[in-house]
Length: 335
Image (cartoon, rainbow, N blue to C red):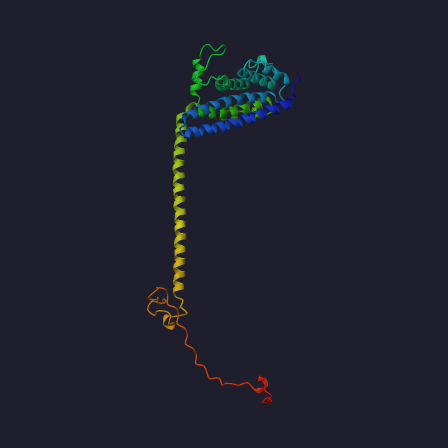
């Protein structure tokens, strides 16, 4: 079997890591929404999904770190021979210190200086304290053990410690663990890949990691969830208040339009009533001067027909008799 080129392999691991981190962000947002709405069933399921994805993130980060071209490929192969992801992280830490300070992996940390060995033990403690539980929970969830976890092997006995880990998982702790491990992964990258950044930036990044660890130890998931719910209720009240104010504003706008239309109609009617009529009742004999309407017929009730206009006097026209020539007489015309 031909092994994929390391550069291509590293790009594939980085691509997988990016996709899994997007999935974690989306799932954790949905879990936060379930916490706000007090949907306990969705909260539990989405929180466990987030825990599974966090374990996948840590495994992909490991693969991306050890496939970096600047890390010797032989060291990568030795890391991959470890029996579990947790052991791979420990072996990766050992190989990275070995390559950086030029000592054999078996002599780590005995042949390191005090400062170097202190850094090694501090980073190893992070693996034991924070990475091991993440991978352990991921393994239980990957095998379908979402309520009760079994011991590794033939699954004939349950594991109370691992079951307790499943019960104690909260979204708050997962988000803080991810923040802590983000800082730790940067330290590992500087150790394995860079030339000067590890020693130069170690104290600052270690301080950030310890701050996240303190928040995990001293904080409270219940207080965080209660604060989420209070903000959610307060936001709903503000949105309802704003919606009511918007409704009142729209109603007032409609009322103002109606009042303006009524005022315009009133002004128009006043203007029309001020126009003088071209024909007044007393000028038309057909119109009753008292009512202004035509008088009805007594028998039919229909408006009385207008009286015919009086005939104008005609002047007498003198009779003209035809002349003879016109009537066939032989007399000469008079002109």
